[in-house]
Image 1: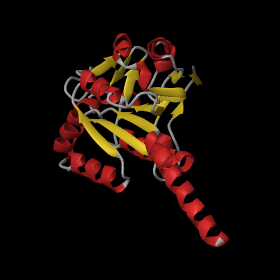
Image 2: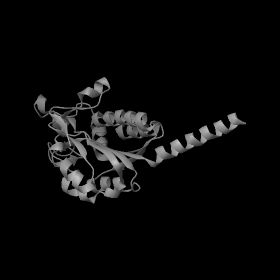
Image 3: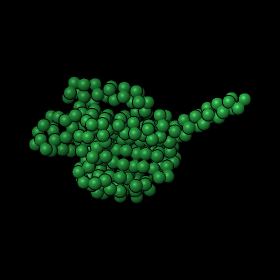
Image 4: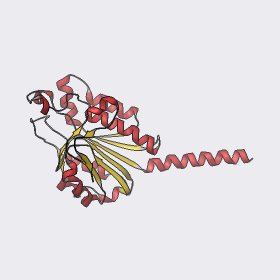
Length: 230
């Protein structure tokens, strides 16, 4: 009798744990790569994205971290800037958007394709109140913008972004208390982090200096040339 009751309690606790994991939401916003035809015009030290999947690989490494920390049922929303991978896929002759969709299915995350900054903010805002416990951005950036597009249509320029002045459009009520937010793009700790906190009420860790994605080849998260700041 006691064994049966214990089993029922264990099942109930397991079900509750899964429910709580599902109620907590994790957002990963992923920008697109540059085109090689533009980057090959630069001197080597200034070139970006020789590998098309820098931000994709960083996203999947972060998914592994989240599932370890919050459990295998952690609910992850992956918001990806689609035009960049369409254009780079066409250039490389590879079905990158298909591969990304397959990755999302394999890792059991919710994939949302976006084409603009406003669409990205709408995708963020659809989350329930007080549900978002982590937010990560992987992509090109400067101290004032998340650059969803960079050097995919115009060399050295962006046609899709989220500017720090746009952050007030993010619904601050979606974030849980003590939500963990981090930008893995260059320079965002130099200005954008302060505007993020003002807009959302939460600290965003950002880079003071440039970020470096070469550590991905060793299964590690991007590093920073300067320091991570709040």
